[in-house]
Image 1 (cartoon, rainbow, N blue to C red):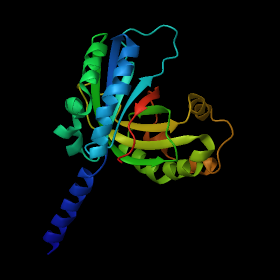
Image 2 (cartoon, helix red, strand yellow):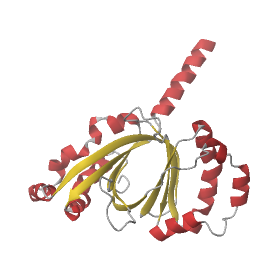
Image 3 (spheres, rainbow, N blue to C red):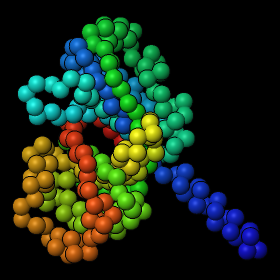
Image 4 (cartoon, rainbow, N blue to C red):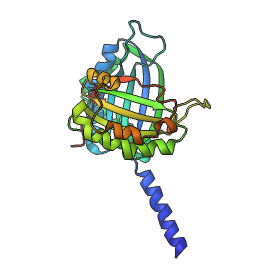
Length: 260
């Protein structure tokens, strides 16, 4: 009987793990006519992505533009990222997630021709795709227009995730409306393209209504209610002593809406 109960517990654990939401970040470097690229993705390909959401094939698709604050573009630097969410790893890696293959069924013949014309005016010179599992998330009413992605490499990943779920999530949920935060989440990276041991292993994200809101969040200023208590309880300096190693900011150019 004990063996049977143990087997059931293991199977339930596996099922819960497989049911976790996942997402991919497909970061690209686009050169040429960037306006044509953005028009192709936000006005045409987005229609096919929305159809995939409506059918339940994916949860979300979006095109984000990396915000660069230098006057001259840095050679070789990525400038866009495609964000795609799914209910589980099977859906994310399965054939239904390749919604762009169904574009001819969603777009008109004239729109298909337009995609070819627009596509000829730019080129992809660099791209990288990584997959993350969602450990927790929270949302407020309304859509985020800007995001900051926070990457890091904790020395204690389990502790980092656990504290985010039990301590930081409740704090942000209580204060989202005060700072115009629309989305928050934390997850772990599942893909590592090389043997380089310096890769970031976790990611958290913060979505806001404007770039100004993100900057105010970064500045800090007057502590929010409960902040002192959270800091007192936090063990983040132990879990991730180096802090976040990279926190780029993105503007949401286009995102699908929830399943209709």
